[in-house]
Length: 171
Image 1 (spheres, rainbow, N blue to C red):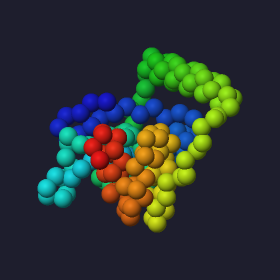
Image 2: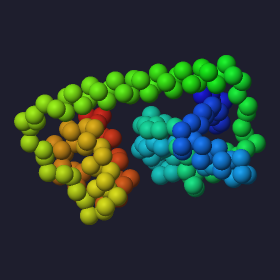
Image 3: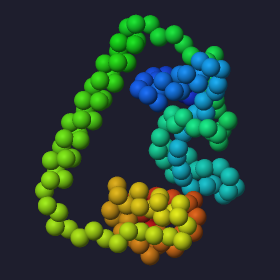
């Protein structure tokens, strides 16, 4: 991936069933929305995200309606020479092997009996906030210690800000 000012260029390798669906849509003349996912605190203008607090979560999601209006079309496709195709295939195979190894390690850990009690799930009156809090707590259990702060959040933006502050150690 390269960035020049406000433009980011990336190579996307489409593979598997979903990759074939995207390629078929492009070949048929369709367009595919591209998006990144991230969050951060706003500057004083209430519109601009503070670059010092911004956390990029994912790059290259394929979406129906991208917020920045970025779409890929068949015109953006470049033919891939055989050496690049082979290199991409090898990288993919290595990633799959690494994921399988990780899964094996995880499965071997799961077989051990758990002695810890599971805390009561985080909830909110807003279902979207509830789902977000539970996803975050699955990866960052320390969030349960701040239940009173998180469960009072009514909208997803406030919940994300609170989670981000807790992760950074600033309550």
